[in-house]
Length: 419
Image: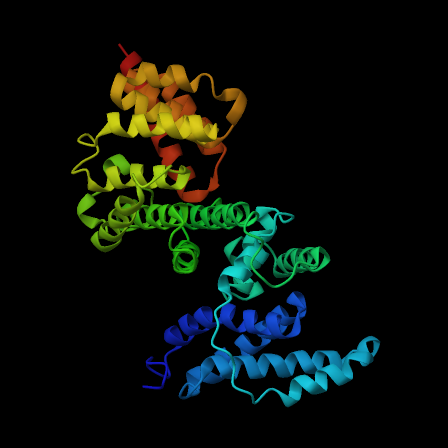
């Protein structure tokens, strides 16, 4: 074992360590040298060098210091090699002189996340930048995760870094009056990242555990940085309680298994226990935000012995609060499902009929309507809605499940009409 307490020579351990150290190293460089974009490029080169060298032998005694020194050298070489920036030679030389100095043990991950989730960035730009700068993923890995070409993702990340540079934001926590809004931006990005990992928007697999796992890791860092923020705790609890169901979400062939049909004995008990403890510790201690309320719903699901035995009236009451708070059409759709479980499918269908203008042709709207129509006994209409849902999702596992349901009900409908 090295001084890090990790086994050496194991690629998995090295990857985990590099992801853990990436934001710490980047924070040190940005604090020391100032240019976020160039520092981030230098850190990525250092991470690649470490990934190539460390698995073949023992880790250095001070992995963090090793990465800082290598990234600093790359940064110095960058400025030395740029003819247009020769005026920085003296500054680069001063950096080189300080490379052997002890590095300050300070974790700037929260500041980095706040910068990566700058209000001027869209989630489509903020998520990849967060994964690269804070998560330590390479551009190739991020491009593969979002099913785009590597050059396309590189351009997206470059534009995001240019936007941050143009903002001239100092490397420091925002003023206290701006911090709540900036934290909400970070939470939103992590929430979207988790959702993309839990059910991918496109591709052959239902989920990407690497993305949802990274979202959970970053949420843990957030909570360690701001332990008194109840919404941060709520988001982490929500992720854990949702991720706990992953082992039962797919069959042996990878096909989707809906919540109502899952074998709950396969759910992971450890994250359920942790998630319930987290949300129980913050609910009732003040105004509950949307992530706390969603976590409370997830906890009710996870603690229920079966789908039918779930406390649906309590879930409906929470969805009532959540819809009033957010006016989110997806929340309204979930509230319609809960309404159907409490008051019957016709009551749920009545609520869904008012969502067409807000959700348009979203596949989940068609899918939920199909389920409720089947419960109401309108088999033909349910089959048509399942077909419409299948045609509107780019996730192949979801599409297969929805198309299978449509075919099943179409067969039942034909059989029922035969003499």
